[in-house]
Amino acid sequence: RHQIELIARNQYMNNGENNPYNCFIFYMAMRKLKVVIGLWKNAVWHPERAKMLNFLDHDFNEPRWQKAALKNAFALLSKRRFENAVGFFLLGDRLFDAVNVCLKQLNDVQLAITICRLYEGDDSEVLRDLYVNYLLPQAINNNDRWLANHVFSFLNDRENTLQSIFVNISFPPFLLLLLLLLFSIV
Image 1 (tube, one colour):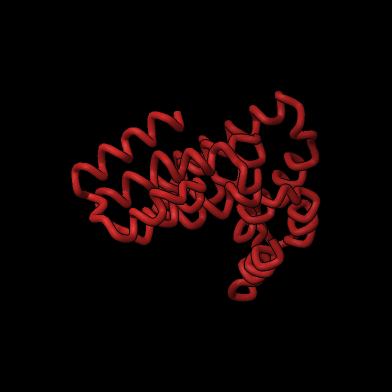
Image 2: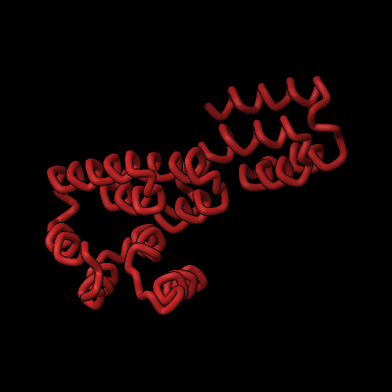
């Protein structure tokens, strides 16, 4: 968490610009809305400052404002402003959608994992789903033993953690074992 705060601070001050959008994802993933509001108050030069301050002043625990955040997220997706859309999905409490944007539009698995861990912790269902339904098939398709080992380690599956190192993971008997594992998890 401390490292991500440093990253967010550095992103904010990137090129001396002090743009709140640069760190929006990270602070939203840490659920630090008040920090974001403070950054927007300091961004007197930004053309969207007044709109953002007015919008962020609402209670996003209420369904009405969560829905408004989601509408903004989809509008930003249509404008291809994917990083900002992720932040608005988090503001609207839609971690799953934020992760999907990270994976499909940004092609950034590491950001998706980081956001999951910050937003819901290591026990996140979305994080588990990411490992089982995205990373594990990717490891098998690419015969990536390290990635398979990492996935099984995360899932606390010691037997397959060891097997993934020593056995060719694209070999059919191992694939059958993985399918059985996937169906037992779901």
